Every structure is written in structure tokens, then in C-alpha cells.
Length: 212
Image 1 (tube, rainbow, N blue to C red):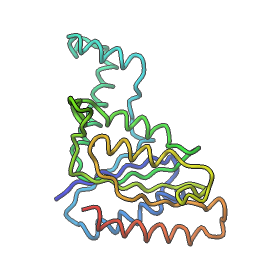
Image 2: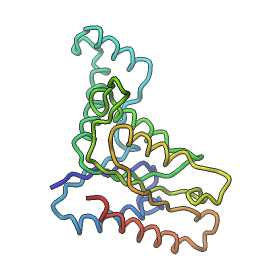
Image 3: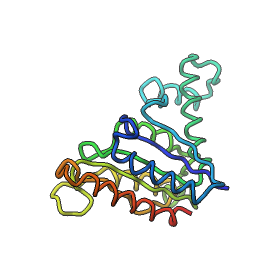
């Protein structure tokens, strides 16, 4: 039995977000083929994702200098506890599906904040004499992305930095990234919406065999 962490990073309803329409069909088929796997879901727009700010960094420095956790402000204690819980949830998973729009050639801000809870020295990576080493080896991740334009084929002069950024982050902590699924181009040609969604759904389902 494996644990799959399904990460939604769209603020839109599931039946409106194009990436979630595809991801929902993917997940239904995945669970059909892997009935013993446990699926945990997190929505980074409805979950309370702790932001790294000045107070958060000051609290971390204070703890490293020997201050007791119980001496921190109660609000900061709660924030650090939530942060650690998200880190541990990510570590405990065996597989990951990340569903996100690509906004302005990047990723949504709440997904970036979520990744800040994931990339933690000593937990998901460590420093060695030869450089950083990822600690989550043997795990795999699939990305499903939606965008109004087409950026994955190389036909545009523009290039999205969102999907490569996530690949880099996940590889950095040791996770193998599978070829991503792109739900793209509907804004260019709305008449092809159903065709684009169906093609992306079929492509995502083909990835199930790789997510073993």
C-alpha cells in the first residue's frame, strides 16, 4: 500500500479549473487501478499555509540559539507546528500529483509558499561535502498544468518557468519527476476546448503506469 499526496494549487472550483478537470479524471482512474493506495489531498488555497516572513525567521533563529519552543508567542508556536505538519505530510507520501495553473509564466503564490514548507534542510535534503543531497529518493511526482497559451512545445518565443521550477525543486530533494501533462491553448482557440481537455486527460491516464 502506497500513499499518494494530491496537491491542488488552483483557487477555482474543480469543474471550472481546466487542470483540475483533467486531474479529477486522472485520479478516478488511478484509484480504480490502485485500490489499495491511500490518497491524501491538500488544497493550498483553502489550507492554512504558513508564510515565511520576518517573524517566522526570527523565531527559527531564536530556537537555534536555544530558546524553548514553549517560550515563543502562542501564535508563532501554532504557525511552526502547522509548518512542520506540512513538511511531515509531504515526507510521509510515496507519490505526488501536483495540479496547478501556470500564471504569468510562473506558479501561483500559494504553491510557492507550500514548497517553502517542503524544502527543509535536515528533513528533505541535507548539506554534504560535495553539495546538497535530496533525502526523498525513490519517490515520484507528476505535474498537471493548465495555461491559456501554449508554452510546452517550443513553438512560442515565450517559455514558462513554472514547470521547470517545480522539476528543479522536486529533483533537489530527491524526487523523480515524470513527464508533465499540459492542458494548454484553450484561450487561443476556445473551439478546441473539449479536444484539448480530452487529449490531456488521455495523456494523464497514460502516466499512471509510470507512477508506480
